[in-house]
Length: 426
Image 1 (cartoon, rainbow, N blue to C red):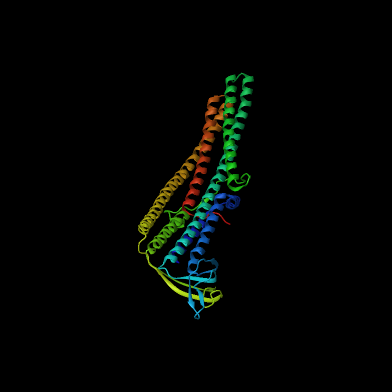
Image 2: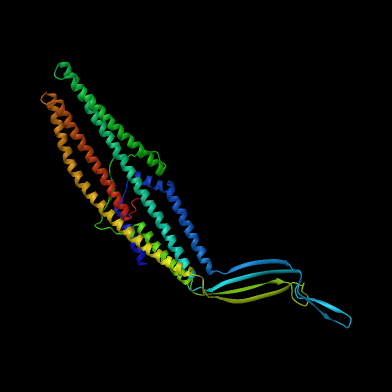
């Protein structure tokens, strides 16, 4: 019980530390009922559950009804005298043989074969359920990433609109200066070129946004635009990865348990089995009236002892042991990979948070530099090249800050996924 409660408690604790806004939560829940991969894995879990009942049915008796008819010719017979002048033919079986019976067979003792099959089926079921949870967590992280990428691209488009509007305003100033003789025609050509470049950059952001929107529709079936505007994903990062709540690790543990049960089953195949058989019904062929249908029954036990079956049993044991070792290696490899990914995502998050703070300082400095350059340009002290340079610096700083926020959100989402935190509400 303690082993079961521990991962559940950890998962609950981290679920409380991770949260998403209601809009994103709706999209995540919608993806669970829409995304085909989750439905496929859920169907696999249902099949695994049915296999438990199949394995447990070996504890139950088998009851079969049988009706047979056989015509036999010739049949064994003999003649014996009934008088000095007369003989009579005695048939040992009739030409027409009828047999109607109900038979029962029950395994009395199979030295743990059925128990091992049931344990393997239960482990497979738990593995299938954890695979469903892993897929749900993966899809939830994917929807979260798409959601915030759409916000990032939408804010980038809005930033481009601001930059284009800035150049449009300066274009009017330049046109006025040209009329006054204070600017050259080449300045107007340069500002037109800058506007075209920024428009192309906006088109690229729009293209990426439409691709993400299509991916969101593919994942959730929804064709909506996010109303959110902030990178508000919250996840309290732990110091160390606790893989006990990660569904991939839990599935790997169940695969190890299934391999152990399979190994026990294969090893027990070398042991004998004891079964009970009984049947009752009606058949003919009894003397003195061999055509009369008579009630009959039988009961007995059978001991089956494997003596020689080639090398199949030994090879099956070898294969089962190697499969168990492979499952344990896969689990270790998965745990190590998760640890590596956790450390990488944590390092990314720390770096992005620091870079975002630095970018915020750069944005403030670039904004003030642009304001001063704009004033100097309007007074004829600065050149148009100075203005373009200051504007480009501010644009790069703002895009960089926006990108760091976005990448930090992705890193936080990845940490939640690796931890196995359920950051949505159903």
